[in-house]
Image 1 (spheres, helix red, strand yellow):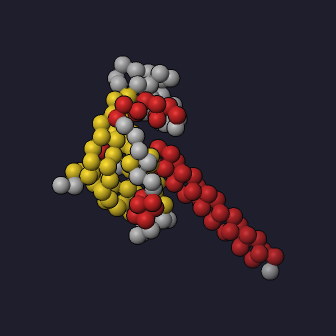
Image 2 (tube, one colour):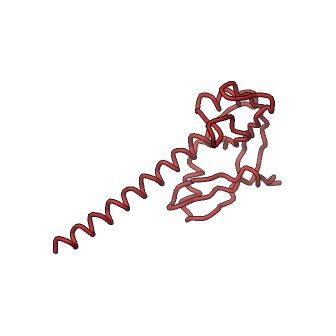
Image 3 (spheres, one colour):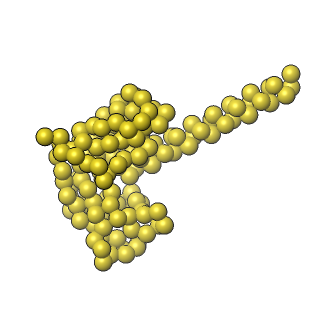
Length: 137
């Protein structure tokens, strides 16, 4: 009986850890990609303020911001796991090639009515495929 209780506790611990990992991935997604409003020329400031860096801590080459409160993103992931294509207005920030960490410089461009592929896992957004933006109409 004691062994069975330990197994149940272990499974509960693992589920709790998985939920924490998913929550962190979702919070990271919102930090990197969701902003209520911004202008193209604010890319460098927003990237620095939100501490968005590349994989090795250097300047991130490109980052896409969804101009939204996040409610539509959350509702998108409520439809299930996988990649969902949703229409958003976005600002795409691209690193100026000659800039380097910690003085990363970015140029921005606003794109309205873009289909954005958002990957959802366990009901939360975890990845945005910015390279696959398509104009809605």
